[in-house]
Length: 152
Image (cartoon, rainbow, N blue to C red):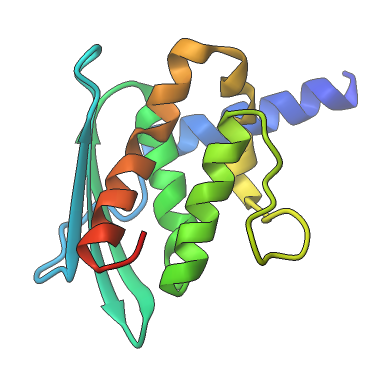
């Protein structure tokens, strides 16, 4: 097996794992911010709740329904922003959007590209323009929640 095939399989496994077993799916008792995004074309939905302590995202709740891409991306997003301060979370959001649009993941003020870790498993989605909206749905909900906090 070629190395690129192994990498594709690993990425596919990460996406399927997050779809089958979404992380941070328990509702928060008293969130500091909430966001929601709905794709009217396919009916996918993502809701996010954030708890913030000391300027950091202390806890995340992700819920929704939809295709494997939208739900896995939202689950991966929750893992990526948990523990980050609000500007860092916004930088990850901007870098992921840039990845989906085929642009550099460099964000103003950052040295080099933002490391997206397991989120790179979704990089292949950009080859399918109709699925990009699916991958960005949870991120739109996150942006809504960050605006609720006065950021973004």
